[in-house]
Image (cartoon, rainbow, N blue to C red; front, side, top):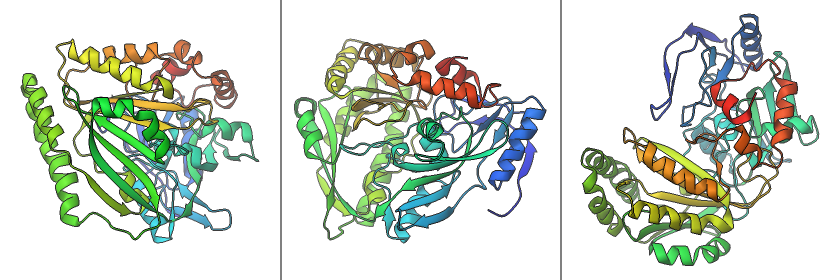
Amino acid sequence: MSGSSTTGTARTWRNWAGNITARPVREVSPASPDEVADAVRRAAEDGLTVKTVGTGHSFTAIAATSGVLIRPDLLTGIRAIDRTAMTVTVESGTPLRRLNQALAREGLSLTNMGDIMVQTVAGAVSTGTHGTGRESGSIAAQITALELVKADGSLLTCSASENPEIFAAARIGLGALGVITAVTLAVEPLFLLTADERPMTFDEVTSEFDALHTENEHFEFFWFPHTESCSTKRNNRSAGPAEPLGRLGAWIDDELFGNGLFQVANSVGRAVPPAIPAIARLAGRSFSTRQYTDIPYKVFTSPRRVRFVEMEYALPREACIEALREIRAMIERSPLRVSFPVEVRTTPADDIPLSTASERESAYIAVHLYKGTPQRAFFTAVERIMIAHGGRPHWGKLHTRNAEYLSGLYPRFGEFTRLRDRLDPDRRFGNDYLRRVLGD
């Protein structure tokens, strides 16, 4: 990378949802790994902590700092594509949207991804961002190598064959082990997915959940509280031909209904909570069946412009439906009014120490509330249900769990914390959130 870093006067940093703020001593925008290393060394000299922020799509304070804030805006772009190894090496600050678009132009794609692509690569992998899949899960599980700056300012590369212990943990490192400067991801030739979206009732989708998971490469659904309505999505590979959504149809579904009218409905619901069940029933009746075939990122991802806060827990997959039914029963017997749908996805087990799918096949239940809506009562009640089923909270989404709880749920939790003690004994990359979830 060419260019030079910039150091700016610190200003208040806010995340995307606006629920987390931080006031660092200074901000740095490095343009190369060497400049990241220099920023870390200077912070150490000044006795300051260091955190990197991406696009702020975490709802927790995982990136907050009162020390040095690194903005990775200049650490962008593809470094290399290896068509023999079928990998791409990308700068850590590259937004997933730009990565997906660049790969498509090269006739390549990631195997799986989440449902939005505004995050930076490093931010997405560090927090365990995932999609849904029978055989493929988080973006971090697709990593083949990492480059990061350690607390002493040295640059380290790691992979399954080079510094394998660090590689194993740093794929989902929470920003606790170093500053990621580049990520190498496995890719494959560009392929087509057919999306089959259709409404189902709550009872239908919950009774058929195991079969729907087994029969589809990627299955997910949304349930609208206060209704019987669910929207389901099955994504499976296709031999083609491509039959993308028409531009007008996509705009009507994703922008007019998915964002514009949804924004209005949530604004009304926040102002007049008793109206939410009626709005939800109307929304549930608006679902229709549609099919389209396109390249992966155009099927997996959707624009999300309505701002919200979110809690998501990973459960053993066999516990998912029981937990969801308990959430439904809790909402029905409470005065709560919930305007956002509840999202359910799955991933296979993986071997990453702090992955929410570490060593267990997982299902995810995500609950959302419109920005500015009182959240404590709903999230507390949901979290109580998740904890009873051995839930692991998403690292970037709201939760109240601490190291004592988490160490009992992650078989390799101690492996991660011991490595952190070795790599960052002075907690150069620490903050209050990491102190709570990892201990000190």
